[in-house]
Every structure is written in C-alpha cells, then in structure tokens.
Amino acid sequence: MRRFLKYELDRYLRSRGSDVLGELPLARVENQQYIHYQKGALALWWLKEVMGAPALNRALSAFVREYAFKPAPYPNSLDLLRHIRREAGPAHQELITDLFEKITLVDAKALEPKAVQRPDGRWDVSFTVQARKLHANSKGVETESPLQEPFDIGVFTAEPGKKGFSSTSVLLMERRMVRSGSQEVKVTVERKPSFVGVDPYNKRIDRNSDDNLVRIPE
View 1 (cartoon, rainbow, N blue to C red):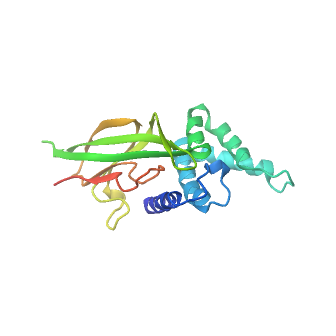
View 2: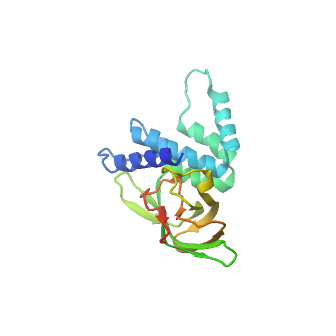
View 3: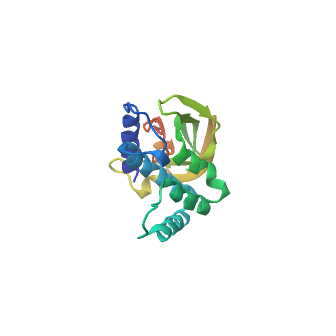
C-alpha cells in the first residue's frame, strides 16, 4: 500500500506543479484528473485512517441509499460531504475541510536519527520531526497554518516498500500528535533498527514524499 500511496502522491505533486489552469480543491474539481484520481485516493485513504473505515462506509452507504436510481437533480460533491461530515462528528470537521474544500499540504520530515543499545538488549531510538501545514491558492501561493494533527511514527529494520520489507520489519508503528516546528521522538524497540520515519507509508498529502524516512547511521 505504501508503494501505491507514494506513486499517487508523486503523480499529484508533479501534475500540480505544471497545471496552467490552476488547481481547484477536491470538492470543486472538474476535468483535472490528477486531482480527482490521485489526490482523491490520498484524501479518502487518510480520511478512512482518521475517522475509521466503519464510519466512512456508513457515510458512503447512506449517500448511495439517498440518491441511487433517482432522476435529476443529481447529487454533487457537497451532498457527499454532507454525509461524510455527519458520520465524522465534530472532531474531524477541520480535516474534512482541509482535504476537500481547501488545497492543503503538509511538510513533515524525519531528521537526526540515533539508536543506542541498552544493557537489556533493547534499543533506544530518537529522531527529530520537523513539520508544518500549508494552504495554497489556485496559483500555488502557499500560506502556513498551525499544525496539530496525528501522524504515523515508525521504526523499521528495512525500508518500507522496498525488497526485503515485510511485517516482521516493523519494530514500532504508532500514531502521535505532531505540531508545527521541531519535536523530538523517543521510543524503545526490541531489535536493532535501520530506518525511522514520520508518515512512513506516505498517507498524508506531503510536499516531499522522500524525506519522511531516514536511515539510522551505523
């Protein structure tokens, strides 16, 4: 899944950089395939991660039940968002706005990884996360906004998405709140780690998909 998400993210980022018409938010897009296909996949995947698959599936089911096989007036994106917002509840309203009604990107990167073995054989791991959230207009002009959102934090024995990676390569995967600026992450794992990352599976719409993961120096 990480390979798919990274592929879609990179296609979206490349296309938005060369769009002469101007990018529109996902809820308003028409005939801009890199938005409703590539960005749409990323937005729905992260929304599922945050609000939960059962809640999102209930919203989609209710949307279909309301409009299936009915004549005009036909539903639009706002009708879909109405159902999603109802199921998501108050905690996720800002996320829905960011994903569908604004052009929102995050910029999160992992830096300065360290791993030290403890006397009991386990490993103390630390690294720095730098993060920010940006809102863009149709011309790509970006304005920074406060960030305080959940991000996946991971520690691995092999690089996710590459040959040799499997479920046994995951030493730690947990969700933590990340804020604007720099913050230090400290965890303890059972085996020697090789990689650490913030949003290591590229679930977020990030300005750079290549700096989420970093190799721990030997």
